[in-house]
Length: 154
Image (tube, rainbow, N blue to C red; front, side, top):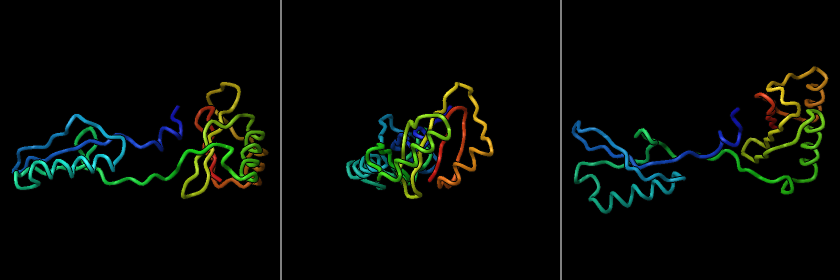
């Protein structure tokens, strides 16, 4: 089961290089947890090794050497206690409707997202019409279920 937390976490970044004149590309073994750190490493290499004078171009890449642009984090993980009371009450309401407990909360540019793990170990979740009505009246924007994990945007 893929959790929302895994999807939103930033991946690893590498420094890739292009030798020029059809000589191929490569990737240095060092990895960086943020784009910013990898970009600093690229700038340092360019400065140390003479930039494009030596015909080698350096860039931020993934592990396969593919060019990577700077990513924007869409959401930040927060704790329940950081939310205003009204938002926290909504999460408690979602938990009651679904019969589960929240596992993670994200605050992002498109609002709040909560993952709720439902009880029962059914490995699937089916919404009854009454539950959907309750969720909609509680003010959800969207809902997604994957096994026993239900993600709600509100």
